[in-house]
Length: 309
Image (cartoon, rainbow, N blue to C red; front, side, top):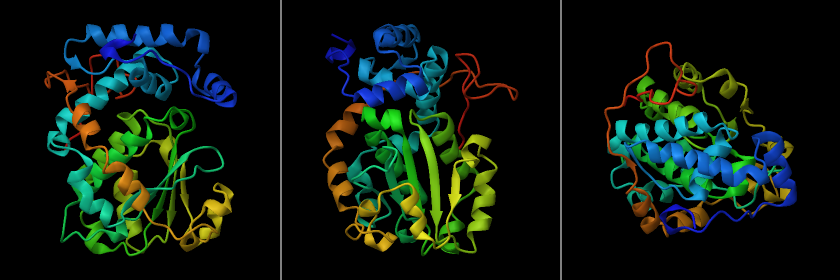
């Protein structure tokens, strides 16, 4: 048995995905248990950490960092330090608390994967009414969405992409995206979450987009920038990476009209699950901050970036 009473890891990957994990993530089936145990021992030695140590949980961090123990451990620490530094976002974080965001249709997930097996998040910030709720609720909704997606090991291997439809996005939305908010979002995606983010595809970019993108881009790493795609109104370009029958008709495909109801229904069943996850974290929020020359990913264990709010 693994830690926390959970059964040891049982691989559910197809032979093709096992091969892909080995080639891209350095995941060798014969060494997997040894690697998980090595990371578990690092976690257990860190007295500030009170987190799950079952195989499935630790494995998502190993995969995110290509089975480099130190980088996987550093990602764990950065992830939970981010939650401490932004405690107001994570207190009482459960799907019921962001039901209004889901009902507005802002965030959803396509039922089918793209041609490379990646899960597809549909994000439509233009449907947000800033007069009714704040931008932090959108952050919380997207965090819950990504957290649920990454529990699936096929997604851990293949990754996630986002289709961002900016139809209806205007100044009332853009003025809420401050440099500090942009830093927080990019810090989560790039430095503090155990997922392979493989691309963001922008559609219907409005004139204000240049202003907003200039704010966000300053916090993007070159690797992230290289995975951005700007399509304008050319929804037919979705066919390059999503099978046409899976693309909703209102996005230029042959599938049913898009709705996030299925995703809304799935998330709203998971309050108890996320309440349980909230028990874990750092018990000491005073860990040493890195010097200006240290990198949040590659610094030695014990140094972490503070994500300001």
